[in-house]
Amino acid sequence: MTQKSSSKKVQGTISHVTALSIGWFLACSRNNLISYNAELQKRETIVSTRSLFPLEHSKRHATFKHIHDEVNYSTVFDAYTPFHHYMEELVYPSAHNFSDLPLSDTWFHYFEAYHNHMARFRDKTNVVVMEIGVQSGGKIPLLRKYFGPGLVYVGIDINPSTKMFETRPDDDFTVHIEIGNSADPKFLAKLRDTYPHVDIFLDDGGHTMKQQIISLQYMLPHVQPEGIYICEDLATSWHHKFGGIPKEYVGGNPQFVKKTMVGMIHQTMDWLMAGAMHGESLVRRDSVEKIDSSRFTDEQFFDTSWWQIIPSQVKHIHYYNQLVVYEKGLTYKATPLRTVGTSIPTKYSGEYHSINWKGIIQKLDNIFGETKLL
Image 1 (cartoon, rainbow, N blue to C red):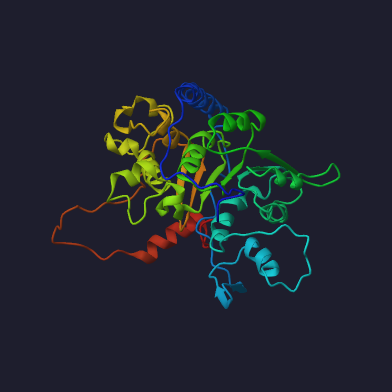
Image 2 (cartoon, rainbow, N blue to C red; image 1 turned 90 degrees about the horizontal axis):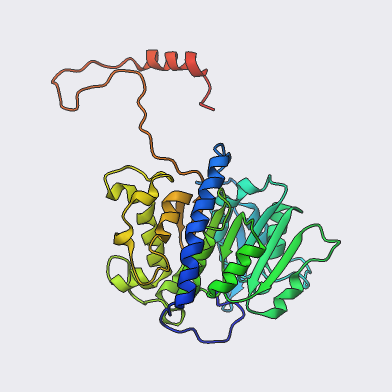
């Protein structure tokens, strides 16, 4: 949404970090990659790393009656998630008298993405969610109801008043609030030291290009090997006051690729397929360092090898309207498979025989049973 807790005007260009910060990140990035690979080698059987994507359309539809710009409107969705349920009950104006509830200000179409990628964490005893942009604290009770009492929420904001949302000893979940700027590498380094375990990272902060890009570069490697990283409100890549470039796009202005978060996302999609640029199908985590980084060198990036984080740690990239999700997991070199059976010539031979599908399906039923594959 809007920039969290800030009245300062944002500079229209991205400033570069100091030489000291550059040197610090060079060391931390390489060390993080090494420690990450060591962690994965110990966890060769990570399970449940896949999301529910695509979410099955529910027979139940959420209808929100909302007042916005003094105009009444209703919106019907083709998917219904626990997030929709929460907002359906509490969106303003609500039948519930709940004036002490921390207000949530978000976009309804984010909920399908949330549930697609967060649902697999609901069975965990403890889930650590770190979010940039606490604002009025509305995401906290929503996530508590979604994940249950095992939630550990770490909120980052520039407004000291958000400390009011920290939990008490008798609460059944935990809220920590840290005050700082997500564009400050030293502050992010302190966060990584203070909170070594992060399952889900949400960037819903100031939305400037500098904040979004620096947060991705510093915090994506820090998220757990099977965790997720989400950045919201990507429309600011086209807004001057956030450092974006209006009316441009990735295939048009090269500066849009270099200077905006949307441009960065497109680059990460290239990096995910970096092996294909060199005639390979995919990059395995133990071979990523063999790829020449010179083609990815740019003054924007703190470390010319930072791109290696994507193919070595990221399994999926999911791109939604105004939102991107990086799902981390084991990244192995792709292996082609071929079943038993008969192949046909790639060129037309002039002769063919009708296939006996009934007999083939019967043989498959003998192997797998007559029900659908499990």
